[in-house]
Length: 181
Image (cartoon, rainbow, N blue to C red; front, side):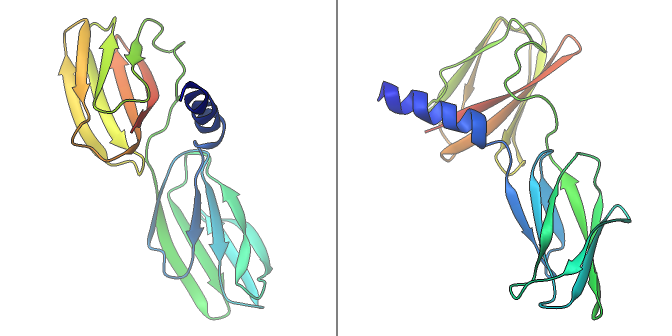
């Protein structure tokens, strides 16, 4: 079990931050994080181009599956457009959480444990703080304002998955990834 935990947390730390989102002529909005990759698909075997914030980023003849190309989210994107001879398709891009994940240098004295957890997360050495808990799709799950030095957040009613704890304390901000089993 300990070996699985070490391997799993190492895998999550290296590979789980970025997500790949397929974007097609039926996509209206993409909810994503900074660092995620958008994969664009358009008309098959014809010239397609993609703009982000009105700047062309891809211009190519799509393959037989409609694949146009990839784009990595930088964090300032608001809109996209896929276009070809058949017309344009517009959509919006919503950047969810941005910031530093698991970087305790931003909030040096804060400790969140256990990670992974089955039900509760304890947060130690925290003065007055705002805590926002987000699901892996960026939806706000819980929010709190605390003035304690030890805080317990109950996740027992939440589904298994990855949750992000955004902690704002003393003008410092940190985002921590927690695995709920």
